[in-house]
Image (cartoon, one colour):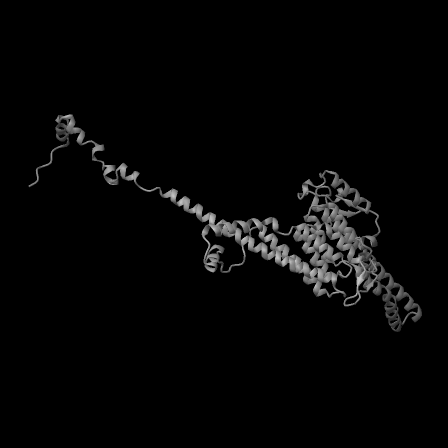
Length: 427
């Protein structure tokens, strides 16, 4: 049977009567488990374990070195293939030069596409972009299998030699490719069509060499036109001021965008001079924008006279002749006033203007015909000025002051105070 429990005060009294050595046995630290017993390892055993982190680091370095060598070899292979492709493109270009006849547009486009393909591949190699996913065989293993001789040291030396021979310096420079395309478009037997001009502008934007774009725009309107398929080559004199020689609107926009992206104000103004300010552009706008209204204005009086003549039949209280004259005069007055108000509203509204507007008193017809030029100058001002509206008008510098004066010389106003935010209570 279990002994009866004692009161707490008796237990404390018996503990205090025991010696100090036995009381220390019941203390808390003695009741904790031993850490050395849990580990079960002696310092000698720990000292004998191999240095695993060092081994992993050495292995990782070897793997990184092998991957670097493989990447160098792969880059060298890509550069070698690119140089072969460039040689083929150069051969096509020289064949165009040496041909006894004027080649077709398809042949010329193939040459420009080849230059663009070389440029894209060179940019991809410089940016270390990988090739499309496909099965790759390491050069060292393939060399050892095919040759049957050679060791790892010889393969490493071969990789290093190839990487040194075909490094990034062996890639064709953007200046060389730009010059190659420029010489091709300047050649006498190359006809600059809208498609070729579009490819040329995109190529120069890709190469970051847009300074040659105004030359192509000038040649588009002024270069002698070779007759396709003629042998020996025969040429036709162009008419730079003809509406047929106008730069397409989308190409003019792309050319100005390239100049703005290059942050070259002089280049942007040159593009505007060869596109929106060209005589061919003005004539084309007259034909497309004023051709139909002019025909309608010429036909309208005859139509109104016929309507007045038909209305005179129903006149019971007035002479038919006098009724016809009065009806004709009234209809002409109504149409003339209505069309005049519409034309004034069309040429004077400023909702689509951002920073460049016309000066007061400038003829409305000139405003309508030069609207594309004003919009282009507006794009240039917005590109070089502050993007925040509350900062506009605070720009400084020689380029900005020159742009302001040039805009004023062309009968325009940059940052008119009446149209700026906060200056007009009606806006």
